[in-house]
Amino acid sequence: QVQLVESGGGLVQAGGSLRLSCAASGRTSSINRVGWFRQAPGKEREFVASMYWSGSSTRYADSVKGRFTISRDNAKNTVYLQMNSLKPEDTALYYCAMRTVLTTTYNGWGQGTQVTVSS
Image (cartoon, rainbow, N blue to C red; front, side, top):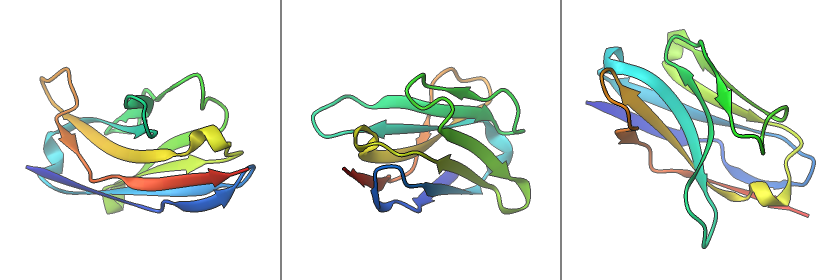
């Protein structure tokens, strides 16, 4: 099994930056793809960004393109989400997720880290 632990959330003013971290442990060799999702109060969870565990083939939601960057530190088995030019509408609980080989859905999730952007 794979365990995912997010950190780095907090309160920031609009226009500011945060970097979220997602530390993976356990059978990381089974990870195929990792992603970030978010859920705002009263809204459904939505996709933010993803990449293959190798670091290739990044994808972003249109709402964050040009502002957010997903990356990985191989040595630390940690995935990052660098968030710049934050907006109040980015306020949400951010989750790290992973997809194992031969699956088409994300089947491992972290506990989430809260991001609050004040106007």
